[in-house]
Length: 414
Image (cartoon, rainbow, N blue to C red; front, side, top):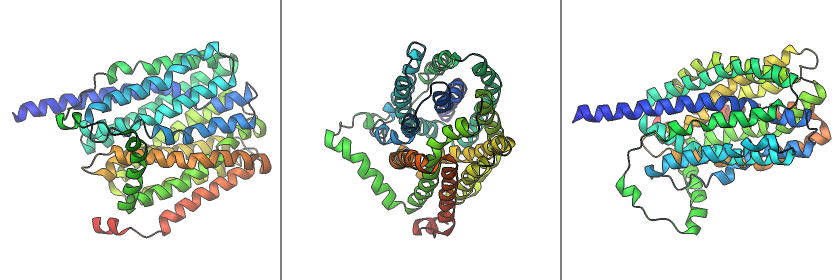
């Protein structure tokens, strides 16, 4: 009997790891190109500051709505796989048609659909990993595959940068092709095993009012009852607000101030950022096991604050541009691991999807304000001033994590 259970767990573990690996590798070509779209729209299509501001606002704003996509999966394992697959497929489908759509607004629409569904599937994915992979192996696997995807990003950067410079409209074909490659992971997602709880499967469907208001009440109650989790959220809120505030300014700074070519931006964004991620991921994984989330958050926010400060030196020496992305890659590596795995860290034996949904909700709440405000302030003060302001806010978040006392809940745990 014990041997049979062990064999079943091994099968669950192996198939889940295989699916996660291909999801990371197949999605990275799309991610590399997707991160360049604000720059491409400004440089190649002459997008206005308003259009850039709308585009950069999509990523943080839409999680407020994608929050509902996963709101009904708590303690309902039978919904996890379909929730993940649906979000993955729907988020990438519109990009298949970009070669035939010569419109900035259609591209913004594609990005809106992607940003809605990209965050929608995260709670389901993280809960599947929590169920099927033991904690130590889960953190090791997640970190290793994350590093592999950035090694792939470095290699892709060497190829894509030159191609985009040589062929003006090649990005349209690449959008369609990379989205199609990402969709191929559907075939491994379908094979991810989930143990079904018959009692949870039989739970009644909630009325519409409860489905609309329930997730918000659940989120606020969780923050109220878990002050350690709330403290983590407010620290991340401040640092994330600073980064979102400068997001509309970055494309203008790259194009209008630095006059970068496609190859230069993709070298910074994919190659040098990838180097920062690869070099630091091992240390972040070790820190994830040894340090409190507040200490990790403090270090991440300092790294994010240094990124725009290094960037403002780039007009004097282009090497600062590349160095800034090494700093950003180091901070982003820690942020990616902590933000995505924080649900499992705080949940312990509880369902982690409720914690992951609060992460997404808070991302959306700051996104409603920061990018729009950043676009307005950039119009008045210019992109360089905004970089200084963003750095100041990130450092303020780090100071908050350092200065605010440990919660009573956290003291009890210590």
